[in-house]
Length: 210
Image (cartoon, rainbow, N blue to C red):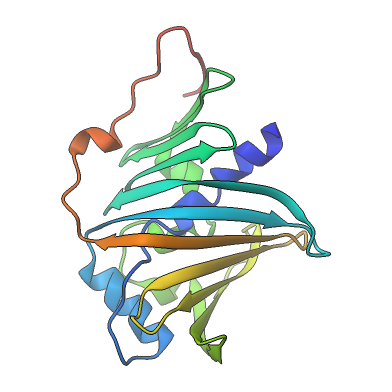
């Protein structure tokens, strides 16, 4: 389970920027418009990890928030508690059950992964090739393929509903695993407290990293 918990930190920064989009536009246009117009967002989510045969490995749920550039908070509530915070400079991962904190420089944590989409830059196509995938199950799909091979993900799929909201994200890694994120109760540009993006290690917690 510890390996899965750590892998979560590679995923959460991929989605803290993508929520409601402009209506009556292709998925790629919706993505670009959102990145340009959205300063903050909040949503509930579920996250399902599937192996290459489609068998469920893990299922978790929680709530996420972000404020661009580079600030985000993910609270995993079930089946275990975990908090991941980006304060603009550092990346914090707190495992409540283990009472353990992992901290890194934010840039080092993001690296050249698809998290580059969420770094605060509006130049989405700099690191990814974006293509519209058409309609499926009444959802409008977009595919993002990284231009570099220095990433654990081979592609990312995003699906938008009739209201032009991002409701599903599928992250395909190089090992054949698929992570499916589903969003609900989306709020675009809410007013968020600055305290949500600050993290102080709890007293007595083991702190690993910088």
